[in-house]
Image (cartoon, rainbow, N blue to C red; front, side):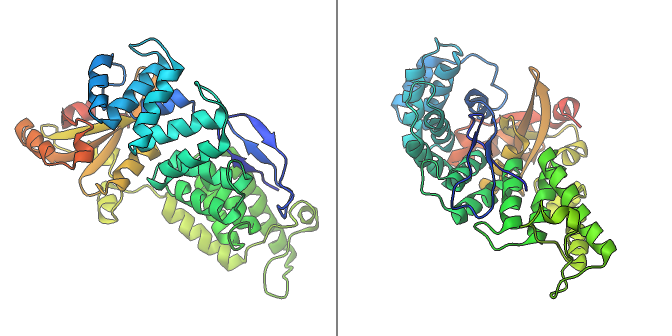
Length: 380
């Protein structure tokens, strides 16, 4: 039986809660370190540039939450200032109280691990994860889901665990997709549904998650073996074989017609989309779209993130699908996913458009990029 993978950074294994109907081990995986997640939110193209701490402090004193967040990141990493965990916590908390989701998340990680100048406090970690999760931050949604699944910092609630994991899985958090599949397979917090379990396992497997691939092989093997034996129960469902019955007592074999339907859905989900298809379906435009642009046009680059799903999530959160796109670029031995907005015939037109952007976007200080330069530098 598969284990439910929870990630709030500390590598360990928790014993299965007594109330869990099946003997699931809740394994904690090592997530991205705090500083990597801080660097994700750096302003576009400026992640390797030194910061002006005095200027940021002046902006923070005037209530600029992003300046407070960048100060916290600087003190936490020792970039351009002497590393100081207490200062990092102070500035992260300052930004978090002003509602900045990324600061709320980083503060939650600090309390969840008892590092960087604060004492371990899972209840406080859950509080800040909740605030960031409610704003759509995928990593926070995932961690909050695992906290509800394990009862750490909150009262254990399988339904809330499934709800938050679903939100994170919909933003392509691989571990969330796998964990949600486990819940669907065994009916924990959600109605037992083998078809939905297969879809979520496939989502994680397509992203390279080996545990999901292993589980898919096992489940498909069960169905194939049962089909060869032509053994069906009273409801027409395929029975597991004797060799797998003991191991998978709680698994629900899929009907053959369900499996065919899942395969059709799986094919449609994993088939690469052209840029035209993405536009028609309201998807997020990426490398194919950039490759077909006139190299003499211009766009506004908003920011760069180190995780592809975070770039897509940013675009969807701000409802920019009809204007935004993203591309990958390699910089300082790190892959970054840059988000751009609009397409313009001149630098002046791009700059004018930038002035009319929502304030939440303007505060990221978008800058003009030539599409030909993007085509030359982007990863294909």
